[in-house]
Length: 93
Image (cartoon, rainbow, N blue to C red; front, side):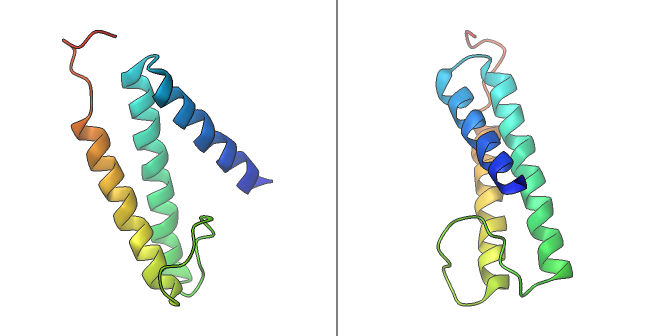
């Protein structure tokens, strides 16, 4: 049930970002969601490094810790892109 809720939230965030409505709020929500997912991945790496995150993506390696580390790197890159893409106050809403 939790996995389905997370997937629906991700689709809702993607739809919101694509729509262009309230771009600052959409980007902030997306960055916060990525931060939350990163905290969960980090905790998984610390507590159970041999457990895969279950992110729905195919495993890159046979090692769950490596795949979770790649997930953290991906999330960090996406957060940096979000910060760089942040609309300035001069941009039209």
